[in-house]
Length: 258
Image (cartoon, rainbow, N blue to C red):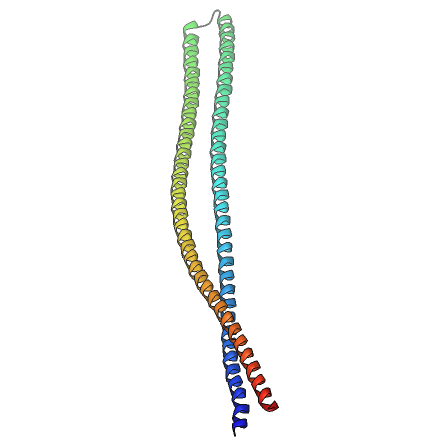
């Protein structure tokens, strides 16, 4: 009976120690799996933060390019309108000068023709009723003067209407430019507000992400220290078990030899 007790007790003790060691190894494996999952989640969060930072930088560059394009288009449109208005004014001025020169030339020719006609009439009126022909000549001169005056008045009215149309066009162009300028100022104000809000949100997101990273890093360090302590404890326990088994085996052999 004593020999049976001494032969079964070390085996039961070894089985109990082995079961405890297996449970601890399983707990260590589960801790390792949890730590690996935490590391993967930390890497995923870092990748997400990097992608969001890259996308934010891309949006900022795109907004800068769009603002530059809008400013360049507005500037080119204003210069184009100015050139068009200047060309129109130059064309009207050249047209006015051309028509004025043509009118002066026509008047000079009509005056020369009138002088020649008068000379021919006075030469042909020898021995004819001069007062009657003088009255007819005066009436014709009045009609020609009225026709010339009407043509000049019509030319002045046409020139005034063209000048008023040009002034209205310039006023409308100034109004459109003012509206576009006001719209650009409002758009810039909205862009600045959007940029400020985006910066606040990005700062909040980065602060929260940094806080979460620090919390997870602290947890990871605690888990790592616990893992190391468990590994040290298991190593010490394995050494103890090996020493106990060797001692028990030695005692058994010594008793069997006796």
